[in-house]
Length: 158
Ligand code: ZN
Image (tube, rainbow, N blue to C red; front, side):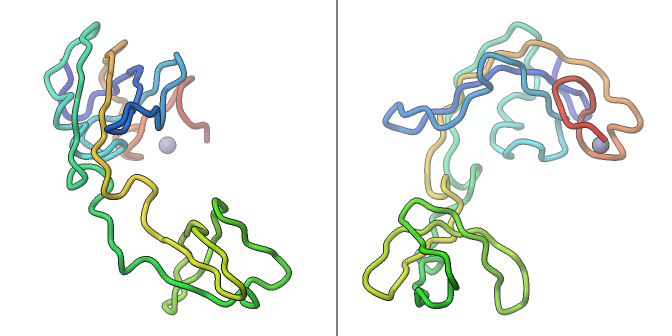
């Protein structure tokens, strides 16, 4: 059964409210460590207590997903600030804040010398619809617990 500190493998498809597929595990299992925020909070909560073989449809509000959409994170910059690059709508750019922290923003429009950007997470403000199937559950190793994520074939390597 899925409880905190279990390594869980699942297949999933994530759709928006219009049925557009936003993300999928692509027919393979995706591993995560339950209780360590490897996945969004709302999904962790919904998966608690499930067993291998269980399938579940989970609806997640923006508050338990990627947060509300913040209109204040939309802003404009002068094209000259991009140096030699020519920003096009749909591009992601890496910028740094006045405090020197790097963040990503999407180019949402270009008009003359003005480049319009949006630093919201692409899924901010969206309700998320997951279809999940639990394919494996095991105890985490000490090392996995101290790293806060699973190791092994389906996850990252050190
Ligand atoms: Zn690790």
